Amino acid sequence: MVIMAANAARSCLKIGFASTRLPFSRAVCTAVHGTSFLFPSRSRVLRFSSTEDSNQGRPPYAAGDTGDESTGSESKISIISKASSKKNKKGGKEKAEMFRLDRLLANRGVGTRTEVTALVRRGKVALDNKKVVKDPSFHVRSDAVLLVDHVPVHPLPLLVVYHKPFGVHSTMGDPMGRPNLEDVLPPRLAKTFHPVGRLDADTTGLLLFSRDGQLTQRLLHPSSNVQREYLATVDIDVGVNENEEEKKRKEADFEAALRAKLAAGVKTADGIYEARLLEVMHRKKIEDDEVNSIEEEKGAEGRRSNAREELVLRVGVSEGKHRMVRRLLANAGYPVVALHRVRYGHISLGTLSEGEVTEIKAQSEGGQWARRLLGS
Image (tube, rainbow, N blue to C red; front, side, top):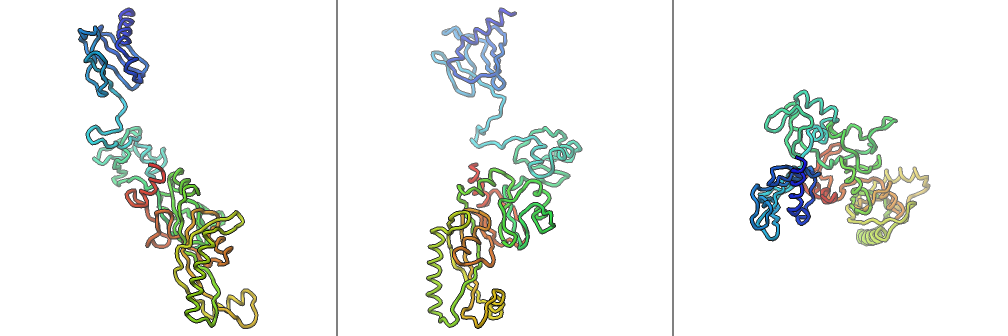
């Protein structure tokens, strides 16, 4: 038997493994001798027909998936892979990735691996065809529809948008008991998502939550050049006795000067940073009582010579340094009264109500942009 195995091995080697240049690891070579020889491979099996090629004196190969042919004969090699193909042979489309059932449930925010394992073993989890699965290691497609206690559990989004109100701190808890982000997300999302950067407590508007650390890094890093857009309300001085024509001229000069100043870069304690003035939106005149109150707070005496107006500026920046927009505008000569973020990259706040959250769907513009940012 030892001699027969050795002869079978030599026959297999003579067939031309070296010429095929294929990466074999545990393959079984069945030659005309009727004996199998094991090669160190886990994924591929070589099969040969039992008739010899009369011209070459070698056993011809069976027709294979690879289409590789040996030179000088009609024999062909057949490679049978245990690993599933990534491509669908008919349509050429990529198949969904396979995951363990307990891992997929945990990824969808059902609970920890320990918690979802207990649910599966108790028969609480079923597939979309109503088949109950009690094996946590059972493999399912990544896009499979899963039911937990008859309730569908859908895949989690990459991003969630939150409309942050004034006074809420961008932390997942606060030792002083101040309003924070701890309870703003639904329980299904709270265990998996984290805030992308932060907004100051006195800044309102769009705050993103992510469940992917790499995506969060791409969103925050300056090299990604992700634009953030804010509505900044600033205080300006205006002449008391100016006519409309004079006001319009001053407004045009102000807009051009501020746009140029922000584009050239404004010096701050952290360095020189640029911003874009996208639009001067509208003015709001501060009434006399409000102006007098402001002057009194500043300790001004005597009759005031200037009136004041609030101006709303639409400003864009590509970095998220601490209080960046406030410092830029203050150092440019226009202190910020109120700040509201309305856009982050391709994701806009839209009509989302204050304190509400919404998921970014994969097929939406924001979802596709996030995928491109990840390079997937």
